[in-house]
Image (tube, rainbow, N blue to C red; front, side, top):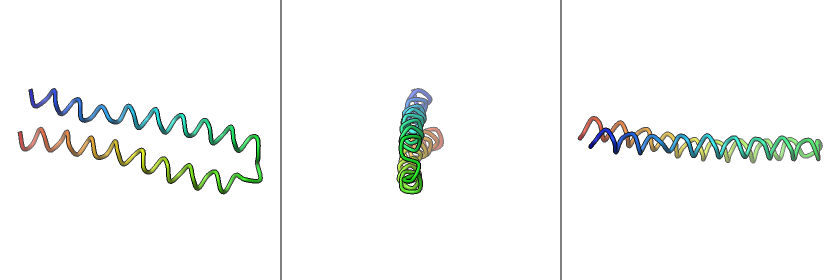
Length: 70
C-alpha cells in the first residue's frame, strides 16, 4: 500500500512535464511573433518552469519519504 502511495506522489512529474511543455510551446510562439520581446518572455518562462519543476521535486521527495518512513 505504501508503494502505491509513493507511485501516486511521483506522478506529479507528469503534470510538471505537461505544464513545462505547454509553456515552452507558447513562449516559442510568442517569440516568433515578437522577436524583440524575447528576453522578457524567456525570463518569465524560466521562472515558470522552475516553479513547475519544483512541484515535481516535491512529489518525488514525498514518494521517497513514504517508502523510507513507511
